[in-house]
Image (cartoon, rainbow, N blue to C red; front, side, top):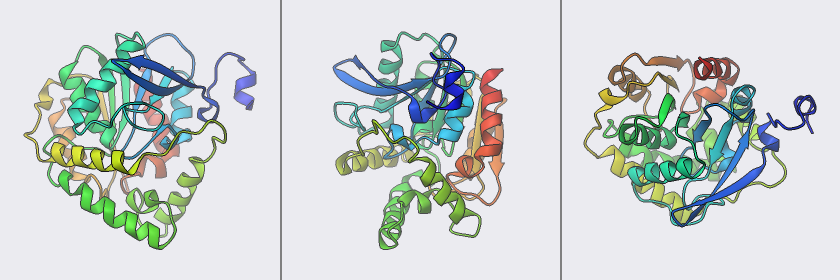
Length: 288
């Protein structure tokens, strides 16, 4: 038990220790973890391409869980959740809605990264009454320029990583320079902090299905984001090769009164590279 857990025996505020739970909705059993003080509006985390519960940076989750009930979950067919991975972002949003409703919440805040941000946008456009606040990081809008190129970039970086026996995220999320490389290693190390009850890896078939969904999303007609009136925080690195940084600016222009934070000398994982700066900003935004 970590130091910050002994002060309150009932509230886990360390993601490494968050209990694994399941809930069934529409014939799908969703795996999730929860931490932080219960009561009030929960913050639901929407994860990235090929990611499971073990892919969230504990420095960001823990910072928000100090004062908020945080829930991370595996979408259908991912990690320990049952069923087949949906081949559209819209279907992923429908699953997220079913999951939230099964937990009994009428209002949530959303923290989303990459593919999760695409799912979150579809969710809020379809169910605006459900979401109070929105954090969109490393993501872009439906029909956004070059989103469909994510597939080629991803395969190329996985190849580069394989050849150097590295984690693909070191290539996909971080610049390959003097600041990016150590930040990448530190991030991958943080993801290993949980030692028990770890999640199942994403299947190759599920991964390919998610890539197909992203491609479809990128080639779709743009959604009307003017309907998003929720307070929205948008963040990215200034050199995102996966979901180009200009798309964060595009989101900012299209979502009224949104706040945009772009971190220098960083890529898709800018919020992880700059977690010490970003985590307090996100926690404060969600607290207001």
